[in-house]
Image (cartoon, rainbow, N blue to C red; front, top):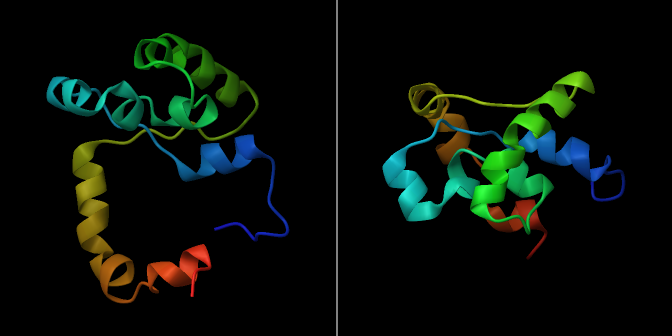
Length: 104
């Protein structure tokens, strides 16, 4: 997480904190492309439609790669493995959400 007083530019925040998962017809239909397969693009351009997110995806990927910024993609199986391998850290020992968002 970034410090509230010393945040990097938005593009650094979005590329380091978001990832895309592979397309899945059921999830695309249910949630749209923006939440699953174009999550990076959605955070960089929140007002783009789902179809436009799909169209700009290759351009965004190329741009971020050229600028040596992360363009994070992963598989569902890998994310599930990560969740179970870090379950204690993510779910048991995690601080209350109010501590993360500053609400007391």
